[in-house]
Amino acid sequence: MYWLVVQELQDEEQEPRPAAKEATSTPKDAKPKRKGPELQNFERRNWLIHLHYVRKEFDKCKTLIREQLSETNGMCEYAVYVQALILRQEGRIQESLEAFQTCTLLNPKNTDNLKQVSRSLFLLARHKAAIDVYNEAARMNESDWEISHNKGVCYIYLKDLEKAKTCLKEAISFNRNDLSFIMLGKVYLMEGDVHVAIDVFKRAVEYSPENPEILTTLGLLYMQIGQYQKAFDNLGNAMTYDPSYVKAILAVGSMMQQHGDFDVALTKYRVAAHETPESPPLWNNIGMCFFGKKKYVAAISCLKRANYLAPFDWKILYNLGLVHLTMQQYASSFHFISAAINLKPKMGQLFMLLAVALTHLDDPDNAKLAYEQAVALEQRDPLVNLNYAMFLYKQGDRKAAAKQFSIFEQKHKAQGQAEVDSEVVEVSAKLGPALQVGEALVWQNQPSQQQKLEKPQKQQPIVSNEQKPDSLAATDMAGHKQLPPLAGQPSQPPLPSTSDNALPYDDIDQF
View 1 (cartoon, rainbow, N blue to C red):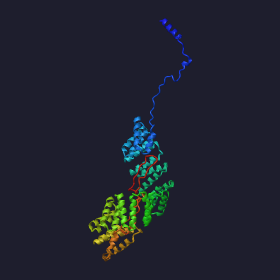
View 2: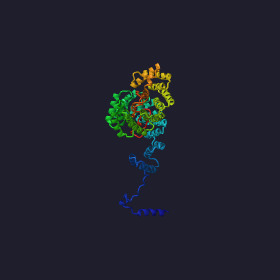
View 3: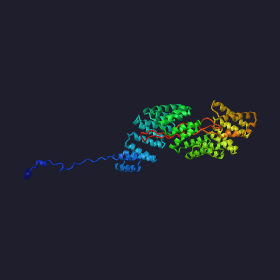
View 4: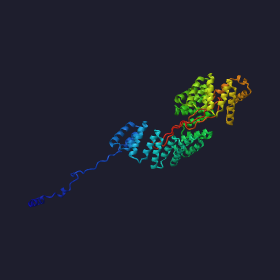
């Protein structure tokens, strides 16, 4: 053993040592070091996905998203986010909501994900749930005006107008955005406070003096309260900044039409027709301009086109019935007025016109029922009672006619110095003595007065300038109230446009 160990040590000593040059091996000859596992880049295709999405090339975008999610096992937040946006645009709201919830799980601290979840809940009409998610997002970002604004819109749908005003005012304090001013003004209009709404829009004009929508809305509100000079100034400013803005053009045209300047109104409407050739309110107004110029065939043609474009608009049907009644086409008038009543069953003037048509169709029983319904629904218009008294007098019921005539006089006195058509004054002056004295000779020799009282001769236009609240205006020779220029069909007011989390609010029937 000893020998073997010594022999081995000797052998080791006898082995030649390598040269110094050989001892330092070159990197080429060295063994490669073991590298760590490569980390997968989840975001490497985000730029390409974004490019196809903004180009609206959704098919290519969805193909890239599938490949990206397959490579990353569904962990790419941006790919899931864009996929949810595409699903929403395709109308698959529930699937979009689930995708946005997945984004929230991947990145729970991103407020944009929470806002998109809230928007999807809003589109599903789950407004309370949307508000809860917005509250959670507000805790992460307390000064985000979009969150406060959209919460206000949700409260509008829940009919909680006080909280809606609070949220919208908070949004304005964070950022004086036009959309928040518009929605706040509409909340006051829903409450019927027109003057406060005007103040809100005046503040909005101070911060956005070149916004044609705000200027047009303010002008229409001035029209509603009768300040036509201020209305014309604001509408003129709106057309100065945007000469092709259809809402302002229709509003100015309706003002001209309301004052009987039909040629100028038609000139304005010609400009609007170039921008929106398929607008039902536009063709309705054009038809009523021709009606005012006593071109009844052209009026019916335009109104028929408007009715084709909007078959469920009761105002167009009302005007069609009015024109046919003027042309003594009582069966056609009955047809259109009946259709309008089906859409607007609580309007007394419609039942009065229906009674006039039935009277001329020799159906006094149903005409009397229509008059009774008109009197029950209309508590302010004295001409309904005047026409009913006229009808009862012709039917020989003098006692009931005298009662209706006394109600007419009471309502007429209550209206004060309101402008009344000269023919209405003339007919009432003849009917009163006839009922009190009992002399029917005044009416026996003048049957045309019945037709003049009941047959409409002129009508104010119905305009949709998209912002002004609906109302009724002064009377005309027909013995019924006219419908004034109306701007009560606002398009959905957009909400924040800085990102895709704006909540629409459709208030067509309310303003």
